[in-house]
Image 1 (spheres, rainbow, N blue to C red):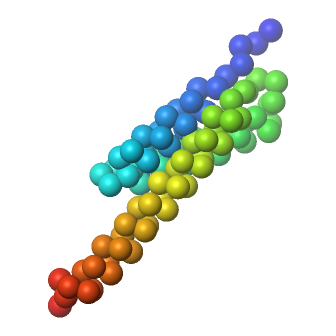
Image 2 (tube, helix red, strand yellow):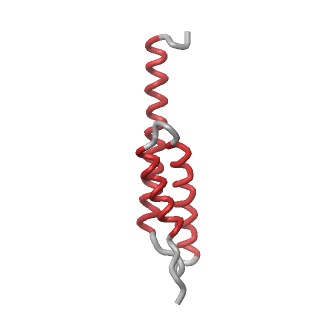
Image 3 (cartoon, helix red, strand yellow):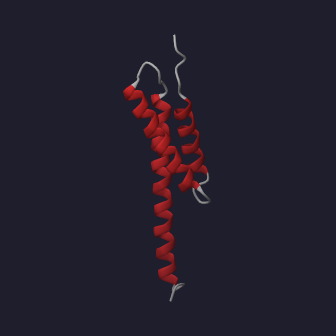
Length: 90
């Protein structure tokens, strides 16, 4: 019996959670890596379901990664609006 692999799913979830915590500093980079690893793991699960496990962790990594990217985009929009409001760039 082969050992089932879930390393990328764990890494995706950990990076996704970390990107939420550190979204202000370098969360965008961590979120992108979490999303890529989550999609790769889900793809591997689809190809070889008997060898790969950890679907929930991969989905959690994807969800937290996408939410973190949303926070970064929202933060940039708010910062841009504040800069325009206070005339920082003019």
